[in-house]
Amino acid sequence: MTRETVEMQLTSEERSLLLRYGYPFDQIRQALEACKASDDIEIVPMDRFELERLIGDVCRSINHMKRGRTQDQLLELCDRLEAAETYGDGMLDVF
Image 1: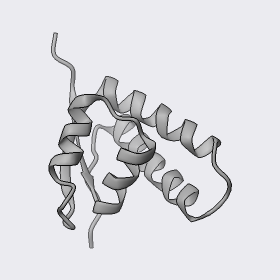
Image 2 (image 1 turned 45 degrees about the vertical axis):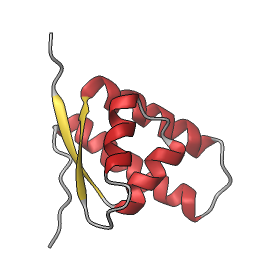
Image 3 (image 1 turned 180 degrees about the vertical axis):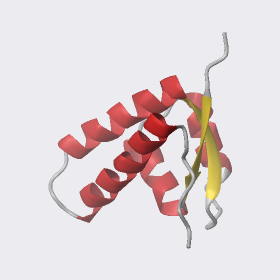
């Protein structure tokens, strides 16, 4: 049984936040680390199960930190991850 994959466009900063505060599964961690040196927006594929767990981990990190810039960044990232989970679209709206 194959799981549906969501392709997430992530900025360099978002990828760094996920590596530090998201505790990703190996497949996502490897994809994030593979484009770690890039400053470009990169696509990181995530299956829905991994995405759901990643959202939970990011939320846990948000709840365990003091208010500040990093928490705000994680809240925005979490909103994007949740939207991708809901709609199956992780692409950034770049105008």
